Image 1 (cartoon, rainbow, N blue to C red):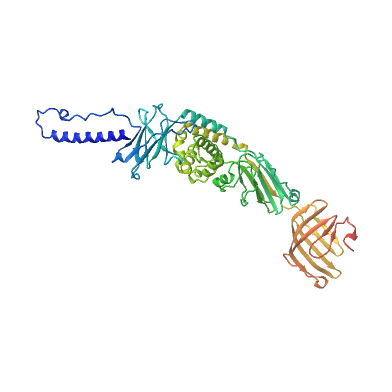
Image 2 (spheres, rainbow, N blue to C red; image 1 turned 90 degrees about the horizontal axis):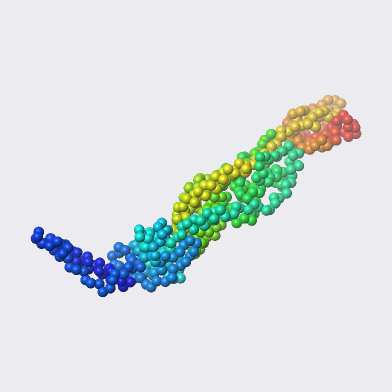
Length: 515
């Protein structure tokens, strides 16, 4: 640092001589010798002026700084290489303001070479990184620091780094398809007997099951693909998804980032189960698709994997693993706002200082030449376009419907001794009991929820009208309007729910219905 101080002293001497010359120039005659001839000669230097490897520029007291002996620079690799030694810079007390420092390089670097300053407070502290500006001669780098410590300069072989980025992007493996089989489907036969039908068409994106899974009629959808899909089931509550995946993608962060608005985001291997209790004649349509937000998250996965690989190659201490960086970026608000937009918005929102720079401060300096290169935007645009073209191959529709009840097999007239029962085509039942002296009781009720087959059919009966003719002939309580019960027909014998009697078709022997 002694030579640096001698240079500062010389500057002060020259400054004082200049002031004296200006004062003399104001008192001389017009014929006086030119001003330059009156200046005293500068004092001879005891040694030739030497370029300082480290200069502190524009400070009030340069003597407060000192530069120690250099040491070997770090060699991180990954396309970064040292172009100066590491110099310790000390200051008497803390710096009062950010300070401009100028460092000489070992050799001139090629034009357009990105440079970065490495610094640390002490020899055992981790390196951090500062922006550096290369001068026109490409032999010096200037930077601003707010603290003293050790400083060195690294240059970047930009061409090799961008080639590595292209390889990284191309080498990001797609998510793996789940290997766990969906749970067996049960209850489908019983659902069909209740008038339900379920069908799927166009694609095979999710496996599905409609039936009785223990909690009533349900529709279960499981994503069998290697990428997530958006499931929409209008009229049904979006459920929590279940199931485990074996891939290293942070699916929970993924689902939280794209949100539940407009449906449920179903990750590979995950299952969503919807309650599907339909009224007769109702229909429910489920769709499984991808969308722009999901496609941009897939592109973000490639981007975060690539950037994490570059940070590790640069030797950044504490560089995040790809999965963690991906999950952390999905948690950044500026990044989630960019989902569903184009590649430029994705880079700005997810790889800018608000997101990536906040998570990994070194990234703002080290990755700037990478993020500014067209290769990233171009590659991400190509990926988003490809995913959009493939979107049509993802959509699948599953429709569940319930038929209007039909009373085929129940319609007809049934008789017993002193009693008749008639079922109309609309499911209205009239049941009449009489005695030798006249009517005893007449019931009217409506059938619904018909189940069964040709051998045995049943339905829910709801009593709508009661007329009593002879209460003394009625054993037990008189049925009340609104009462319900199960109406059954088996082998030509009808068993109504309200009066404890039976009715038969004409072809059935009288003994089946009593005399």
